[in-house]
Length: 166
Image (cartoon, rainbow, N blue to C red):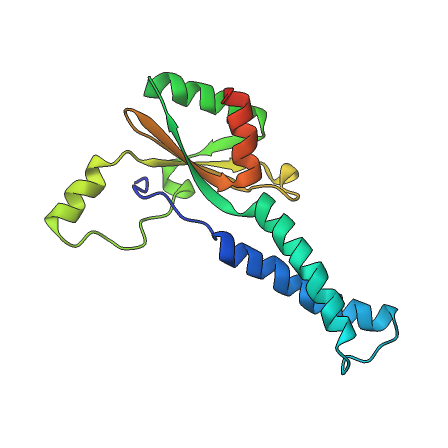
């Protein structure tokens, strides 16, 4: 059964913290070794913090996960066009039983179950393993009657938006 809730990837703060801290730790070690400084002095950490800030901003700008909403006229036409675009970018549709995760919380009440059943399913497109280097692994798509939601990395969503002519 396909998931009915759009997954949420790491947002701005988590992505920034990941890039900043990784660069801070690695940069302070490299700065101390390359400049022959002790890790007991502040200079390696100051240099690494500047590098971490730069890498954190760039990494966050390019690799944070985001949900993009698009208005559509026809769900069927949009699905076909998006499928072609994703195929050009190296993504393939994953069957429902292996590509989408179940919602984080299972619906407990009848109202929750009714809302979950009313929402369109989320489809997962996965990039082929040979094209994985430094790019989004998956694109999640939820197509409704009047709008479509896509979730992936910002750089991938930008490519999709360009190919859609938006």
